[in-house]
Image (cartoon, rainbow, N blue to C red; front, top):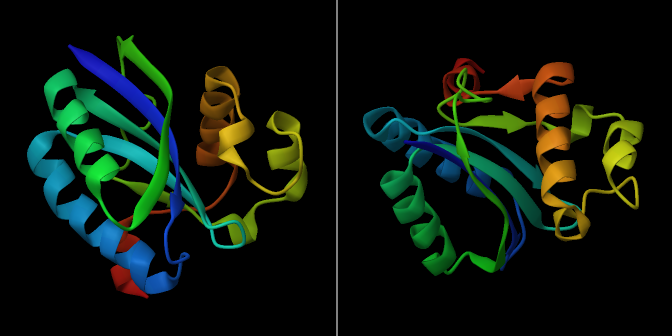
Length: 148
């Protein structure tokens, strides 16, 4: 059975390129092995993450448990957990949305403000935003980052 989990969290020490690269490097290696796909949205300004994970229920549950225990994250908040018939983010072992390339109106369409605050999003809005970002913005995969 496939599930999708969407969560928000805060970075304890802020978000920088090294932090994101570390997450993507680990995700790229492990997600292929475990059949995980998804997308990661990181907002350096607010120090927040919005992430969708898709895969087998037990694997997604274990991954989320690891994220909750990760000392680099705080306030991990489950926004959606659903059984799904097909993946929405199957193109990426873990895609990353470059928020520097996102028009503020895209975020504002689903949110109270133009700056991403995933803690204020409903489950439906979080999924809609991630789907919109995955099709209308630059999504970078780990392999793309290695190229330069």
